[in-house]
Length: 132
Image (cartoon, rainbow, N blue to C red):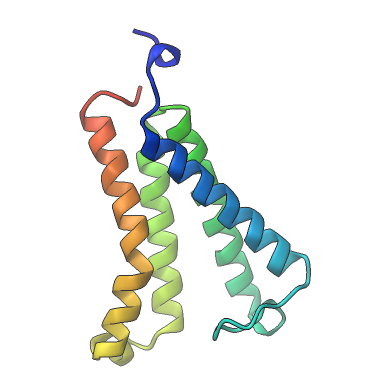
């Protein structure tokens, strides 16, 4: 059976839409010079390293979502790479002691919940032979 003959699960469409809209919004907001006050540092106040990590994370997430939409096996490895980038970003912004308190654990869990769920879903699709 060819990859084009397989039906895409609904979750694949949802993941693609979510990451496409998220990447487009981030480009519009941060690279377009707009700043939304959401309790985070605006683009103009972030360091060059923050900008590079943000760009790499958005690009990697979008690449993974497109690869998953195309039902490609390498989508799993791309999402694992995005998890690594997100983890580096979290560790860069949170001192080690801050990650160990209750608030730090909530931030860590909240920031990694969706990427972990998407990576686990992609792993399951690969294991079940959906991805080729």
